[in-house]
Length: 129
Image 1: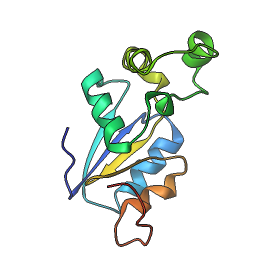
Image 2: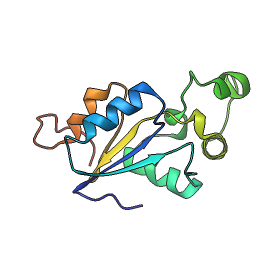
Image 3: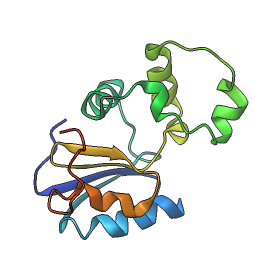
Image 4: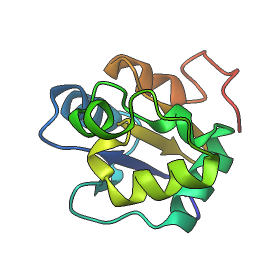
């Protein structure tokens, strides 16, 4: 999975307010946006591993612990990284979103305005590249 220096790639759930707001703000970074609705476009295990590698995160970091699926099926369950990857690809509603990349810089967005930190001219330049 290659991320372009001129394109914002956002993995999101469009019906979630935080995700929609992040998408809207990401348009300030580039006019080229690739929006990937994780509920409609299945993310493969390979893609998820690439996302994790770019973010330098573990699979458990990408679990939305407030999702109904997590609470009903996985809360309190100790899974390996491989098991979490399988669980996340099988249950995309459990994936923490939005996940945004601009070039090689990427982040899990907890607050929509933080997406602007991906702009190297914005002043917050300690993001992993």
